[in-house]
Image (cartoon, rainbow, N blue to C red; front, side, top):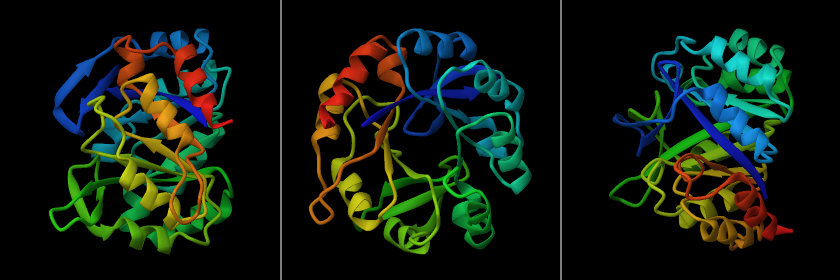
Length: 251
């Protein structure tokens, strides 16, 4: 299982939101310095999200994303505000390894599927979800600020034959909390698609990573290809080397 070290951007700073709430923000300084610390610690992948762009559709931190990508010595997965194929082309052109599609992929899937077909393996589907009171996992849009009305299963079925590089799935109610990943939701995703899955949301300890690395879904019998870790690395709960070691439990 691969470790994706997270850098979320807002107003030019590295931040973490709690449960996707823009009013519950913790700041962690210069994103370039955060990226450098990750790389010096042995990171094999970076995961960069422009939160301002995800919220408004405007590439507010695009120059900063470019700087991180160009300075990185490892593959960088980027997302936030990918609303057109020009956005996809610009991000891939600056050297991003993979571009994560969120809102457009949910609200306008036909056009987003065309992008995926033209850039096979280089686009990821970002699925951010909340569990409704009826137990259904509902996919969110527009930087998590509204529900899409579509269930996780419906979206996975819609994208089943697209040449995606991965599906990045985030349990919004766990994100930024360090309370542990949503294993039940992740099992549903692993059993509901054949694409590589990158888990996100809730990782707070080495043990959380070991559990994810060892887990296998009930029907498909597979585990996540990767995991995004943010707050546990930023607040010093774990360092990158410890996180990489824990991920290696998957063999």
